[in-house]
Figure 1 (cartoon, rainbow, N blue to C red):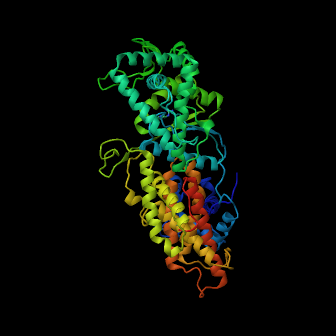
Figure 2: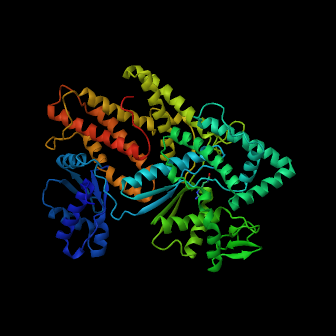
Figure 3: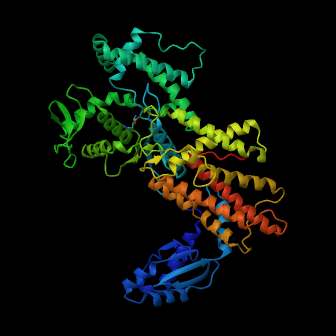
Length: 589
Ligand code: ARG
């Protein structure tokens, strides 16, 4: 959908027109426009063009400059270096473009040309198990990508591929049959997530002890798995209790994390159970998979184990049990054939890359993933402790996600409190803001690192008021809101007739890039580029404040209005951009 063109695209268009007017023999040449430090933009396209036309680039550049009539967008063009064009645009064009952007609720962000359906697999914890720091990343990155894609017009189907199936359920269910009241709750009907998890933990530990020490229990537990797979009603009902109890817990953690999850989108491993036999049959019939020592395997030329022997994807084990791969292959069939996905996204730990590489390749061979369907794993890196090793507690255990979030909120609340008096925050606002700042800090630290990289979990750095943190961005937003409140009767209004100060121009030119940044991120699935954009926006705002007084008696009413306009648009851009990352922006901070 056509929306307000950005300054960059307007300039690009003007230059392209000038190029073809001055050099008809060149055909349609790309001016290769970039933002620049020396002027507003730099065009590098003349160099390639000169090569093509076998002429001197500086002369060619001069010819192009001469052919550009003075106009309302291009203020100054000069030839520099071997034949670059340095371009300065008019103040008027900046404010006019931003005014058009501001009139649009989407701030100029276009809808994708050919939106399709993306099925995204993210936020996939495991039943009866505590959520840990790894689940932070698959939830936070997935949620941001969902928001960004939906905003771009894509139809997004969310799938939470929770671990709710497997042999450990035989042990859990058997234990519950023998200790029927273990999952009962004493207190009223409202069970908290913590309570749910603590009873699940208790059952898990106790059944594990029994399983490891009592051979007869082990046999009964193994038989129970067979009953579960056969769909025995009593067994399935007990399995459902574990799932339900776990969901109470998951929802409480997602709630804390401020990530919205819907029941109908939770389709765990068990949801594909009815397809597994057929998936294997189809693979075997088509010859994509072969039996090897009883197991159903898919081989790849380029995948070998440490011993140099081929290391296959095992779809069915020799004892008849189905593995992780059978489920993922069945899920692909469902997502492509029933959900009509054009794109499959998997927000999963990068350490599972080989699994997905083999699964995607198998699905291609089987014809389930056709050429027009894209499958991408957004493989994320590991969260590290301050020592640079995978994040663990002092006792060497995995860190509970809940503990981490609680600590972040506690630290953030202290930061908010330290500034609260100046702003006049109530105790309730301090608490609410502490949550938004703390959770925002954790999400931002995660999202501002590129997905595949590891990062150090460092709360001191995350809640710091200076630097590339969400708190810095949230303060920028709150500061704008405070100015807008103080402005009283003066309202934001664009005044293209005014001359702009350098800091206003820099802020304006950066605001202009929001739409293309979001557009790019919606294609590349790189939320860190949006985070980086927003950080720069807040930095431009800081410089603007330092250099340009907004509500000053020395300003004409037009200057006040125009500066309020820039503030307001910056605020809306921060708010929208942060929301796309799943981060809140408190009004007063
Ligand atoms: N449950 C897994 C975990 O906790 C992630 C599942 C990833 N999704 C998938 N389709 N295999 O790491």
